[in-house]
Amino acid sequence: MRKILPLLLSLLLALICSVTLYPVTASGETWVSLYGGLAHTPSSKVTVTEPDGTDLTLHSVTWRDESFQSPPYYGMRIIIWISRHSPWGIGIDFTHAKIMADLNRSTRVTGVRAGGTVNIEEPVSNTFKNLAFTHGYNFLTVNAFYRLRNDFLPPYRKGNLIPYIGGGAGITVPHSEIETSTGSVNDYQFGGLAFQALIGVGIVLGQHFLLQPEYKFSWGNISSDLDNGGEVKLTPLTHHLILGLSYRF
Image (cartoon, rainbow, N blue to C red; front, side, top):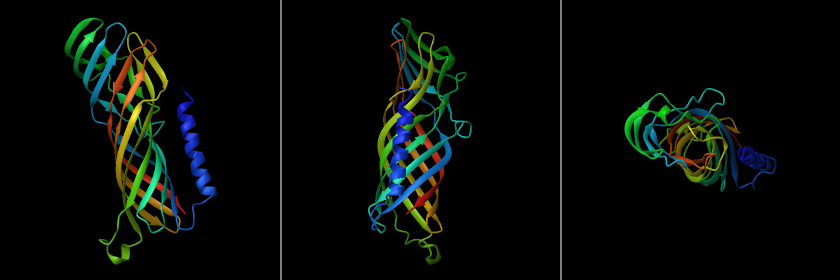
């Protein structure tokens, strides 16, 4: 399973290189992008089931993102526009964002722990020794993009700014670093479905480059299998503030 993410990244890089070396037809246009930024994931519900009868719901786990600490937040994207004058495009987007649970923060916990009923406010550390995705709850999505008309801009700005919106669906490939009292996992796994929506603007920097400030909202399903046969599930909703650089041709 450790080879899943490197394989996906290799396939994406191969696609980017192939498009760069063998450009689309003269009527088309391609943007190849690298970006960094900041991600914020609000508190969310986490469930855990284990063979000893444990079936718990932690109702509000607080997440840290540490977007600027190694490994930092980053992403890669390729968009192929139908034509140079068409507003429509399709693209592939890979995003690496991290979340780490605040184990010392208390939350309401309900369900069954080792056969006994639980309904209590307690620290997350009472259930998890570790609950983190420091190598990303990475997601890979296929998206549709629409370049907005900029008639609302003053004449001297037309052509220099390219507003756009986009959205799509794909998969999560989280690196799960989870440990309970009886089970653990430290590996890449297939997490589940992912969806995202975004809005941004391309700021033209000469003939071939764009600077792209962007906001993105993502929904990702994560289902992590523990080595004892247990399972941890969560669905992080994340806000992304992005700054990217694109090469267009």
